Every structure is written in structure tokens, then in C-alpha cells.
Image 1 (tube, rainbow, N blue to C red):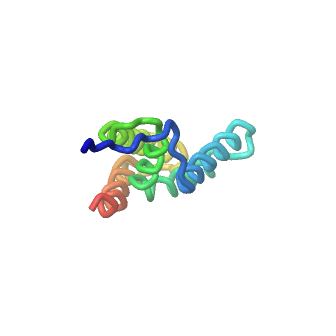
Image 2: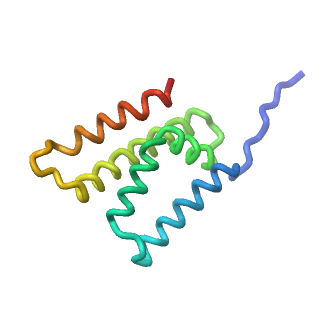
Length: 119
């Protein structure tokens, strides 16, 4: 009796994955066409940042990678990129007139929002 693991299709699309992909394409097209300001893009980034681990997991599940370890590594890289992009957008938009570095605020938000999603 041989145990065969089910083969993973080249692109595994789920409804949630397609929703995430559609959202990313819509935001990218809005930025390219000039209909989306940097301030609105920052707000969208904050919304995605709030559900960061879930977003990264969905994005990694859409990748054509068979190994679960590689998908987990890809999700962690997506999460890191999300953190850096949010940090840079927040530094650009949010004025830090004496309120301290915005990096502490974003790092604290990541700790408070992402820790319960990992447990």
C-alpha cells in the first residue's frame, strides 16, 4: 500500500485568494492611473496591516509552491514586506511633529495586532 500525497495544482485558487489578488490589482491600477493619492493608499495599507498574518497566509497559498515550508517562508517574507511598506508610507504621510518616531507606533501596532493572530 503506497501512500500518495495529493498533487498540488500549479495555481491553487480559492475565493479568498482571488479576492486578495483582485484587490491588489485594483489598488495597483488606481495608483498607476493617478486616481489614488498617497494618503488613501496609506489608509488601505493600514487596513491590510491590521490583518497582516492572515493576508500573508492567503497570498502564500496562491503561490505555485508544493512545499508547506516554502509557503510558510513566503508568507513570512510577505509579512516583512508589508511591515516595511506600511512603515515607509506612515513615515511619508503621518507628520511626527514632536510625537516621537513613527517606527515605534508601527512596531507597537504590529505587536498588538499580529500576536493574537499567531496564537
